[in-house]
Image 1: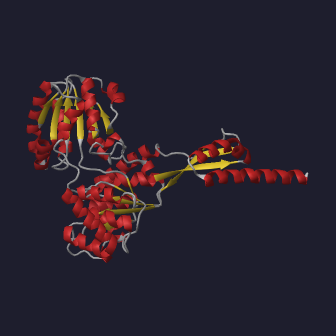
Image 2: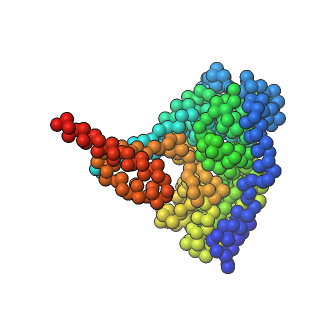
Image 3: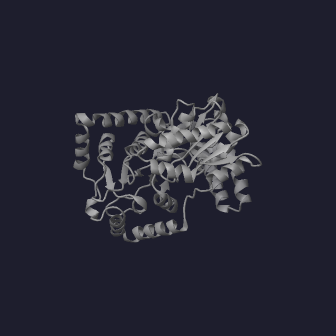
Length: 446
């Protein structure tokens, strides 16, 4: 791992040097995605099938893209055998914890009578139809299905459409199918990548058009979501999984190494960083990494990630260390210091914050409650992890009586006139005229 010293450097400069090898997109990749998006928009299922045949499933056909309910149910029955019950039990427990966490996020409609003659408030409405992309090329990820479907269900989304890339034979991993059945997913399609995102955004004969797309994926999925924002809503731009570990001299190098490797093994392009006040910790962690990586099935990916995208920043004190962490604005921030809770208020930019050595990121990835769909690539500066509000809209509610119109008319007219919007002025004046007419009629009746 590259080691960057604080001498003569600002926190921003240190963060820039740590992130230097990472790149969210390239011109070539953008061009490829633009071509796929344009083709699906123009030719629908034909382009969708062509891309799926070329990239995933050579025998793909439009009529075979939707996974039949019987296939989903069969995978669940098979997993329900005694030998596989532990998997379904894990799915149920994880879904239960994720559901409980997200139910606490549910907003409530509210109305305020504080303005005389007016009722003001907000109304929250679930999005009608949501598309969820579940990665599945390098490894099956039923956890991503749980982490996106459950918050949508808690929000009350009426229709959930799931897409996931098939294998070369058109199959979907049985773990994803069984988890989908357990969660009650009804619409599942064997298509992934940029072509799946485009199909969800525009709609085809086979795949319905959705209002919002959520879920992680590779760089092509991320770029497709970015290009199609506005045509369809998106949750965020999720790149390679990443972690920043903030450590002082009390940190256990064995645990630091284990947690760096836990993120590095995702993919060869996963950024993993250690920010520490203790220079002596660096060599101890490196020695532990060398020892532990030998036992990993994905040692090659982890090793490349650490070598190319990993980095260590040695800071002069905790204050500077926290500043570097905020500049990195990472997906996961893990605090391994003497008093981790004391730093919580200072950490402003993070998708999820794990406090103390007994709080490993994998618990957050799988079971403890929050969704593991989190902002990456410094987007934690302005965005949050997936939650219930990603699946809801809020509408302002306004009712004003004749009294309230009279009370606020002059302010509205003054501002509208200043902006040169005469029709706005007249729209208010017509209410005032109407109010006078109605008042005169009531007097005559008396």
